[in-house]
Image (cartoon, rainbow, N blue to C red):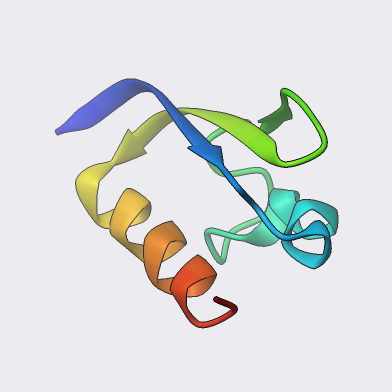
Length: 60
């Protein structure tokens, strides 16, 4: 299942710099910065979203 849009907030600065590869594939989900700590992704699967969550949790 693909999500129309998914916003990740509270993203550490280092991860913001890596937004285009945070899913493991360049520009997957068409990441768009919304602020200094939030990114909007579109067209991601639930698995893609879980991978983003796992990546961010390792930096908590």
